[in-house]
Image 1: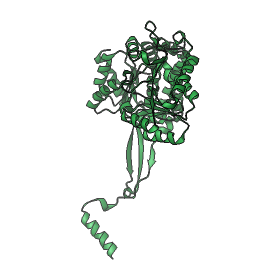
Image 2: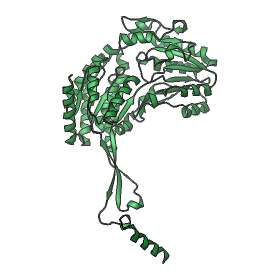
Image 3: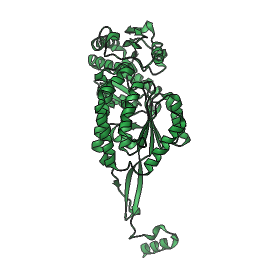
Image 4: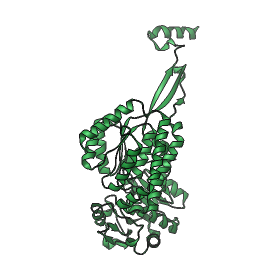
Length: 459
């Protein structure tokens, strides 16, 4: 798409927004219901598009993408009237005879830039929150997941006027053109490298941003953990979508005492969940493209592989792989893996583990497996991270009752449910001062007033 076309889309959306078309809450609800119905109508096509892009099974596509999106829409339909109401707050005595309130207002024209790893979910969920808050939206899906982008474009064009929601497809050229435009809010999900570019471009117009990034999310397995259950849940979270999940456990950091037992259980769980030949499993997905396939293969140290390690370049598949005796200096620990490779590192004490994790970039997620309440409290209090789970993985993002977002290098801002509505809203602080009483104390000349007060108190 040419820069002139993009500029015209943004211009028309701004004009539409300033006509007040999106401010009516009943209209927002109608639009959300229309979107929900259209997604349900195209549910099978959505699943097929995701399968073509990422090899996901129909069950995984619904569980991790379509189903979660529908859940977020339903949540917003139920709650948006309450969220959109003005909220009266306490007024100090100095402002006597007035009403103070907070008024949630949409930012205006919002840009949502989404990634390829969960192409449907991570486009539609922020779109739902932005629409619930009353914004117009320009959506830019990833060029790496073209089939999902096509079905999303079809759904959005059927549901919405382009002045309300528009889709811009394409690659870097379109991304660059979009970031040259002035938006009222930018929501980006993707890598840290691109996130820095987005933030730099947004700063030229002082545009507020939400950045949903990633990082090396640790999975601490403490010696009191239920090892069998821990292995089962770690294998699920790590190899979901072939490890191409921003909140996947990036590496295991376990107590040296339980290392061998944990590795044994992880091997058993990989065989149980994916079979002895995972590359022949029709429900096991693939890496998004050859570039990422080669990058992930380059992180595998064959001498340290204790499970998996095989790959097929023709299908872009890599077996669920486990590497043992990994150090923080190894290549696999120098970047976010974003693939089905799980390094295992060990610590001597929980305090050592906490110190090491806090010396690294803040991760998007942290997972802790432990039965020791003191350890759980210590880790959750002292470690800095976006969010996470105790005795499970990844499921913390699957609720509209809690915000999801990063911290430090893993991002800024959050969304889902009320947090999503708040992200795309500006809260105006307003004082409604009554006119039937006007106290003179704040007006000059001050001396006369204070002389009268002193005279009154000394009398």
